[in-house]
Length: 115
Length: 113
Image (spheres, each protein chain N blue to C red):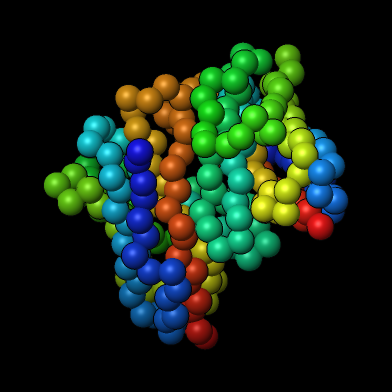
C-alpha cells in the first residue's frame, strides 16, 4: 500500500528564517503530488501541486516544492517565513493508475513561526 | 461562489449511536470524497462518490456508509459509534474523478463519549 512520510512533526522557526519540509512517498508508478496547508481554525487549502513538467513548482504565498523522482521526494520550501505561515502542512499523493482522485496524506508538520 | 460546506460543525454523540454528516460540494464539482482526520494525524480517505455511486473505498469498516444525491451533495453515515470514531470528518469535492485538485470543507468535529 502506498504511504507518505513527513519527516518532521514539529518545526519552530523565527521570522525570516528559511523553511524546508520533507516529504517522501512509496509508490512505484506515476503520481500527482500536493502540499496542503491548514491555518489555525481554517480548512485545508492547496499550496501547490505537481502533475508533470518542470519538477520545481511554485505555489501561493512564496512557497515552492521540488519533485525528485529518483528519491520519491516532494520537499516544500520557503526562503523567508512570516509569522502568518504558522500552520500545519500536509503532503499528499494521488497515484494516476488508480481510478479517481483518492489522496493519501502524510502525518503533517506543525510549523510555528515566532515573531 | 460558495466553497465546500459541511454541517454540522460540531457534534457530540454517545457510543452505539448513529450519526449523519452532510456536505455540499463546490459549485461545478460532481465528485465528493470523505476523509477522517484523527487528532495529530493526517486525513485518511474513507470513500468517494461520483454519479451517486461509491467509486473508491479506503480501509474503513462497513459501519461507515454514504450517499450522494442528484444535486451532488453527500452524506456520511456512521453506525454503532465507537470512542475511536472521534475525529474531524472532512469532505472534499473535485470536478470529475481524474486526479485533479480537491477542495476541502471546514469539517465536522465529532466527539463520541
